[in-house]
Image (cartoon, rainbow, N blue to C red):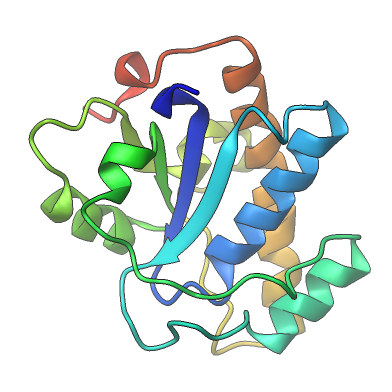
Amino acid sequence: MSPGFSVLFVCMGNICRSPTAEAVFRAALAQVGLEERIRTDSAGLGDWHVGQAPDRRAIQAANRRGYDLTKLRARQITVEDFDRFGWILAMDLTNLEALQLLRPASYTGHLGLLLDLAPQTGVREVPDPYYGGADGFERVLDLVEIASAELLERLRHGIDPSRERQK
């Protein structure tokens, strides 16, 4: 399988936004029979939550919409991820800036913001729900569902991530 057909979602700690994006995108892939052809994962920039399950509020919100986050465990991004994933999608600008600093010069995949794939949302960043209430986790799901549909369409049409790369 080409690394171009692999997606990594990244947020700060890998317990709210990025595991939600991973689960939503996996479900989208399964709906069209591509779950075995397109690899997806999530990671965090920090190591604070490595090995932990996603935030219970993220699990609950996702579960209400039919997504299962319970088997996911937080991990920290590594430089090797740039070799393994053709699409690396950050949840916000802070995450993107940190990823740009980690990015090897040889990386030819797409490094960008998840929501830049879905301009119809009117926002570029998936807000961090960690310090807020349940409605924040619902908002994350709303945005991630829209962006996942857009990402799926791009991958289904075989768009080369090197041509999609953030300028």
